[in-house]
Length: 304
Image 1 (cartoon, rainbow, N blue to C red):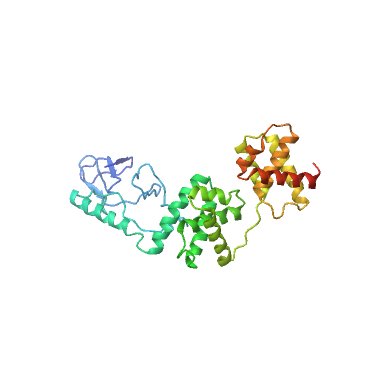
Image 2: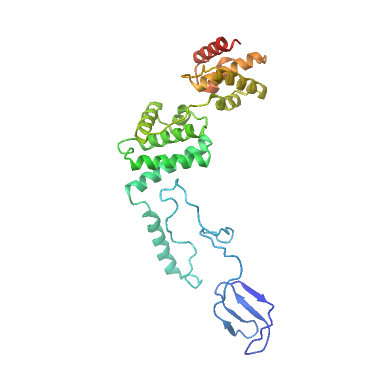
C-alpha cells in the first residue's frame, strides 16, 4: 500500500485534524489521525503510466508493443495480464491465482490455432534468427514479412519449403534496399541449398510481378575490404575504378561481387599492397579464375 500526504487545509469532519492521506492503490482519501474516509475514489492527477508487462514498476510505457508485420498476429492479440489483482486492486487468493495461471497457459497455447498462424509463427521465428546472423536492419525484416504475407495470400507457400520462401523473400528485400547480401550468404545461414532458394526466388518474381533493381557492385567493396583486411586508401581507389567502369557500361551481365573483388585487387597492385588473389577471392565468395577474368577485362577496357 502506498500512502501519500497532501498539505491541504481540509479538516476532518470527525476529529478536526488536517492530516489527510491518500491510498494510491484503492484511491481512498482518509484522515491520518482517526481513519475517517472522506472520499472512496479520487481522480489521478499524475501521468497516466500503464504497463503491459510483468515488471510493471520498471517499465513505464504508456502502451503495449507496437504493431509489426513480423508477428503472426501483428501484435494485436489480447492476453491475460500477470498482475494477479482484481478490479479493485486487491491481490487474488491462492486458489484463484492457480485458476488464472491455468487460464493464462491455455490462452497462450490457443493464440495460433489456424494453419496460417502456425506457418507465420514458424517463418517469422526463423526470420528473427536470420536478422541477427546477417546483421540486417528492422526495415529489411519488415519488408521480408510483407512479401511473405503476400506469398501466403497468393498460395505460393503451399507445397514448398517454408524456409525456402523465407530465404527468397529475404534476398528480394535485400536486393530492393540495396543491401549487399548474396544468395550464398543467405543459403549458408539458413542451411538450405542455393538451388532451392533460386527456384523459390524465380517463382516469387513471376507470381508477384516484382521489379528488382540491379546490384550495385560499389556497395560490395566495403564489405569485401573489411573481410580481407584492406586499407581505406585501397577501398577509395577501387571505388574510382568501378565508377569509371560503370560510366563506360562494361559491367552489364557480370557478377557484382567478382567486379568488386577485381577492382580491389587492381587497387592493391596500384598502391603497392602485397595481397594475394586467394585472400580477396575468399572474402568476396568468388573463385580465383573469376577474379582473374574480371581483372583482365577491367585492365583492357580502362587501360590500367
